[in-house]
Length: 252
Image 1 (cartoon, helix red, strand yellow):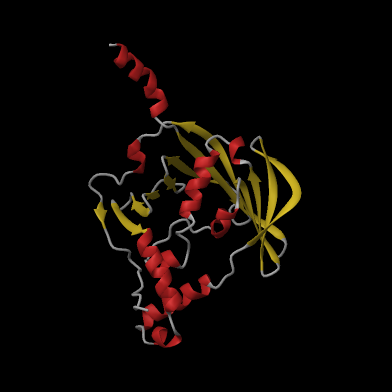
Image 2 (cartoon, helix red, strand yellow):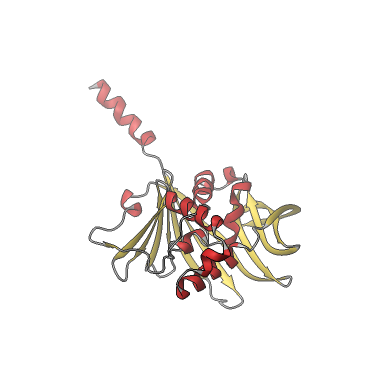
């Protein structure tokens, strides 16, 4: 009886709290805020689009894209992402030229996107207060031009910040180019290519064009709670489908 009572006292400590947060985006093109919802727990990540139709999941180094409108889902393990990256790196002009016209056109577009340099981040001496959290401004420079401003908070100052950052670093493996080749898009955000370089958590992201801020995304409503495991599962009855626009990747 004493043992059972002691185990009961331990239960709250054994149930790890997850983190829920929103991202609110405004832009010159879309002045009305678009809000997306995100969840992280035990190394798993989930992102819902603004209308809840498309859901992206990441767990056990595998990405899932769920389409609630059609009750279907797609699967992309990181092993396939790595294989696609190796094959993309080994492509030669002659191999591309021998592809069927439709695949050749798509592959050329993928390669153009992959040639865009990843931002080089430079910490500035500027600080801001975002949603009550102090953060330091980092500038993302591409080819000598500022493209991004990230306000980075110490992850310990944001509820569940360490767990969010770890999930985003894992998600950074699934960036455009590699996932495009598989016919999927997961985590297609330019700044994620450099997220592994940060010790803190980006809680505000501004994008720039010709020196003018054109959009801003703010992390908001961050709070810890025990999330239902079902949030990170593919709904029962949904059908697995192959990516619609996958490109045939020739062997190196």
